[in-house]
Length: 255
Figure 1 (cartoon, rainbow, N blue to C red):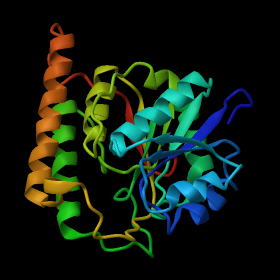
Figure 2: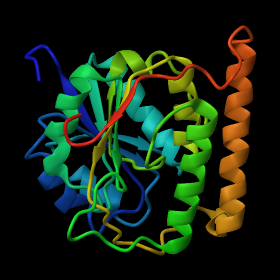
Figure 3: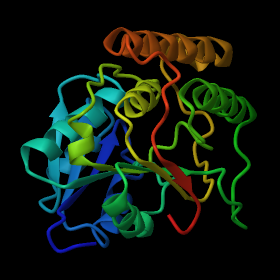
Figure 4: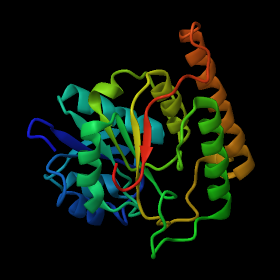
């Protein structure tokens, strides 16, 4: 990482009272600047965060959604002049010691995306079957329609060049936010790199919110968001019909 690159590590948080302190303690070992976006937690997470002076906290007064929390983090990174923003979940499923690798990879890429399927680790968890199938199907659809070579469309462990963030106008506030992200990244011809991360599932019963807890309904909604995002991209680039030529995409440990 060059000396001029300033990076922020941002964690979207919603009702993570059991894990937030331990995860933040570990993140701070690898990142000097840490932002927590508390997306309307009501389980004691807010009170824990109020007792900490070693992280910055932005709080949504009510739950707005995973995508909304990331958008708040992006806005913070832009407004505070960071070069790179790393996003990492706060449930213990990501390993903070990998943050420097993501930052280093972002020196030569616009988006560095973690992939739980790029490499097999000895201690990998067995993913919930429905979630694995949905990820597999949506990832294949994205690759076919955007001329990408992703292996994991939904991993939340990422690093972004802030200048690349400025080229996108994300509006999706829920768990489907990455789908709109990929469409806009392809339209902007951003350079995308995947880095392998272990497959760790600690909460197989996580709620996606209301009707989206049903796998078939969730898959239908993801496809709706992808279609909508593609239509919006097409309307803005009528002279360059989708699929686009595509960005530069790489993968593997050498990325």
